[in-house]
Image (tube, rainbow, N blue to C red; front, side):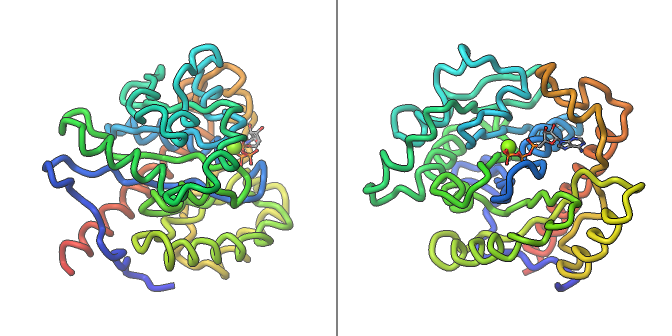
Length: 289
Ligand SMILES: Nc1ncnc2c1ncn2[C@@H]1O[C@H](COP(=O)(O)OP(=O)(O)OP(=O)(O)O)[C@@H](O)[C@H]1O
Ligand SMILES: [Mg+2]
């Protein structure tokens, strides 16, 4: 992997109306339970705490990101299902959270049916992109999101394809376990295919190692393997396995609100600054190009 960041083609920075475009990052890994949702919630919270305006798009029918942000099911009147079905604008689905500057577009189990419902539509892979573009084009500069994080389901289905087609980049949570690398090449291949056929802007933002346990020798070996395989694409920050992180969602809170001082919260704050640093480097490279 090259050391200096190469700007992806057509890096969108400002909309035609002069409003800064949000950076759209898809959190994807077809493996289940690797920390996609936990990272969406807590990276989103950490970015908002640093001053960014963040929207989390829940694209998983399980709705765990919505639940973990304290959005009760009865309050998900308009959801990402309605957005993808073309029945509502993204703006209508957005709900404020307890975290200032952090909003969420929730999901419900209805999303399970969307793939079949839009299977024959010509623009089926670009539904989310169009919804995000419409939101960005109609936002005043002071209310525009600077980051949109998309929480993907554990599958490379049409929902994940919509996320990858709409995203500037992909952030891959990888659990520090024996089979961590298994499945990563399939994901990277899918990213390549989406880049070639649907979205030439798409790049890999980075890989974050999650649930790291320093007392476990295997964890250390997995870290070494992943760093060797993926080089500087792997963030320096690793998210430790931390019981406070796993308790927080049952209280409907990001761990940063539940226990700011715990190791998990501190790691997500470090990850947020790394994400912002990488964004700055990309912008600088794009301005110089
Ligand atoms: N750093 C951590 N320390 C302890 N537990 C964690 C940590 N990160 C995630 N977990 C727990 O691991 C489980 C899986 O995490 P999460 O739901 O974020 O994964 P996911 O990839 O979104 O799963 P799915 O593929 O089902 O959507 C959850 O119970 C979560 O609370
Ligand atoms: Mg999830």
